[in-house]
Length: 98
Image (cartoon, rainbow, N blue to C red; front, side):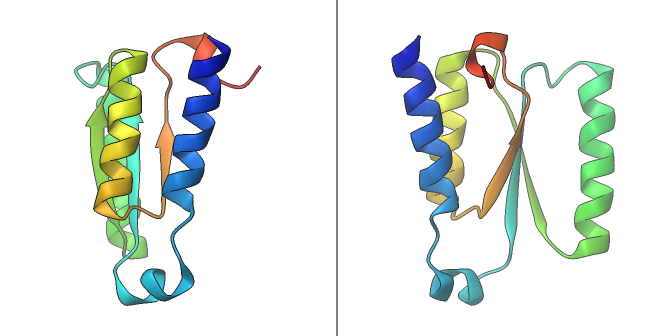
């Protein structure tokens, strides 16, 4: 479990470690990872996040991740897309802050 938490933090840092030059060269992209995308609660969160993205001028990338493995894959995916950050609802409370 400790290894998974370490990997999760490392993944988050990798996504956030975009260089200043790259950040100016591209649009702002923020990921939003939820554990149950089909649930109305998360649909509402995504809806309001879409609204904020339109108002503030950033791109929102929505990803569903039902378990820890899919969460890690989603973080890697966002890093590959050049996302400057992400919001996450962890699929397991043990993956969140201690």
